[in-house]
Amino acid sequence: MIDLRKRFAEADRVGTPDVWADAEARAERIADGTASRLDGSPKERSHLVAAVVAFAVFAAAAAFAWSVLRPTATPSSIGGRPRPPGWLVELAQRTASNNRDPNPTSARWVFTDSKTAAPALGLTADQANGEPEYLVVLTGDFTAILAKGPIGAPAPKGTTLVFTADPWTHMILDWGVSNKPVDVPGLRAFSLAPSPSTDSGDAIAIDGVPFKVCRPMTLAGDFGGGRDTAWVFEEERVPGAGCMESEGFQRLGIGSGSRVQLLSDRITDLLTADAYKVWPDAALDLNGDGVDEIAVAKQGDPATSRTLWFFQIVGHGNLAPVLQNCGPACDPTPFSTTIGLAPDHDGTSTQSGTYCEGQGSSQLVIEWSAKADDPLLVSERTLAFADGLLEVVSRRSYRVASVDEYPPSGFGDLCGSSTQEP
Image (cartoon, rainbow, N blue to C red; front, side, top):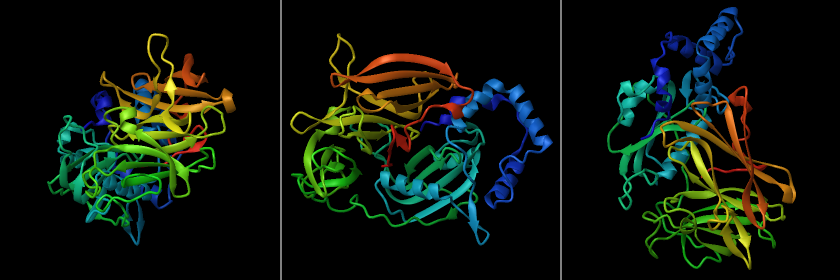
């Protein structure tokens, strides 16, 4: 498993005072509303100034990893008993569903630190840096379809699903499926709402689709000709076999009401061999023709990033990916863009995003990125539509004062359109 915190392991070699007890006390005060995150005292201001002076370079890198999203409150409580934050419950439900058991038999959580949580993930304490994190332990019947492994190898299965989550970014840090029980101090039970799913049942029929499907997901939009709904669904592997052992052959459909009128070829055949888990992310009019394109997303590995492709209606009702002009020496290829925090081949990490400027046919698609070794340097690539293809029209780099000045990421809002989770 990839641990993003290893990307910043250099920070672990810097001596720091032990402030864990103070952090716990402050977390409790924040949770019950009796204290703010910064109390403004002279002592606290002097500590902050000293930290900035002593660790200016490291502070930028740390902010890159920990301040991409605004901090949120630590666990709240009812009747004196802590309860997990709502976003963690939703993340647990989604993670269970993504691992083929939307209704685990039990769920436990604890707000702890990475050293304490390490054994639950098959790690040792010296592989962690002791930062605060949430640990969630689910029991059920899981299939880790998003786990990396040799091509053709079966997905790992197990009765225990464990993951840790960042309390600030709300993103998964580490995860795994096994048959090993987990016993970590402080684990408390919590409830997940029962989730209706086709994962463990029969495939379903959708009007206009000549075969039964699994895990259908819908997206509202304006796709022309009165068509207002897009679907992404998975083919039933063998007629009558159900949805438990599907191959990940997703298709895209567009229609109105409950009927599919336009059906794509297999999305994975059009895009990439490992795009086995995709969903409809957003409906947006990229080229200004008054008809929405469909952003289809694939979860990254780790799950702090995702890759987006865009599909459009071409010709006489064909669904095809938006292509990028790669120059006279090659044929146009499907355009894709990555957003979020993703590891690089050189062992570092890059924060990326996508946003748009302009309106109508003059709208521009802008990709940006910032590497962990220089997180305040933002590089942008601007693309525009020309003859139905996206092509790069300019590039630039500039510096920001802090990560709070990063351009829009594409999470939650993509070019003015709301996005959705899988």
